[in-house]
Image 1: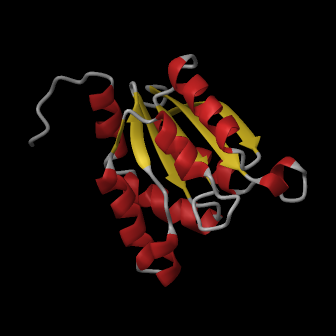
Image 2 (image 1 turned 45 degrees about the vertical axis):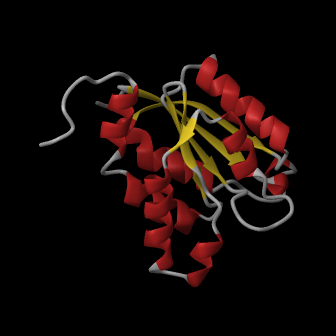
Image 3 (image 1 turned 90 degrees about the vertical axis):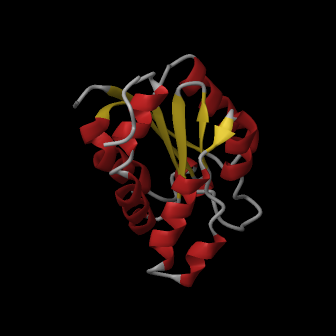
Length: 164
């Protein structure tokens, strides 16, 4: 399965773009999902809603990625625009996955209830908003990993029954 899926990681960080902070969350996200496939795209962008939406559209529609993970920009800061950008490009949301991420994080911190992270689909691409902290990235990806191969296979048209 190592190169079954094409994956992109997009880190949203004004400080990261300016070189004031090293991106630790994006590389960690890439490492955690690497067993699912090839990391085909990686980029750090500022918290600019239209730029984020443009990359999500490009990676989904032109790069034909199967999975896009975003890190950062999911909180309450005025610059946190990742959920708005993501929502603007989605065909539909998968609320159960976002709820699962929040449920796992709520076991660690009450601040998890402030997350506005979305999970959804554009075409055949699954887009997942992750928090900006490495700890949050690890917790959230680990919560979703058991379901990711099945979800991605279904998006690619796997006709098998879901029941086991």
